[in-house]
Image: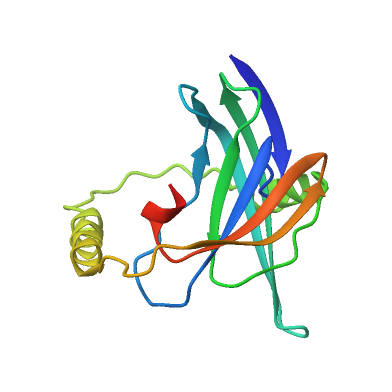
Length: 163
């Protein structure tokens, strides 16, 4: 099994989805291997920074994949088209130093945690209210080479059409 590393949402071949602003349920990131191949995300980190002055959100992703395929894709749904670029690893090292938790030892009693139950209810409700798409189209918005990888920005109205 091969292991490959990538930064800023680039797999060996990366597809980025721009979800149509329909208010419908959108699925999370996913690997896109060729037929009869496997791809797994072995490790992943992300940094999201909001620049108030320029009203710009910076999304920096670092991921390691394990795959039986030579080439594969990685799908990242986003609400709008964005600028795709390479980023170094320094920001992740600095952030890890800044957020390293202080070790505190204490004993306390904890009751029943209702948060997983509430989140499960919310998820089930969101899945039930999702409507099937009428239009099944996928559009290529941009293709470029980033960090040595081929990247394609797609816009899709329907997950089945994308598949």
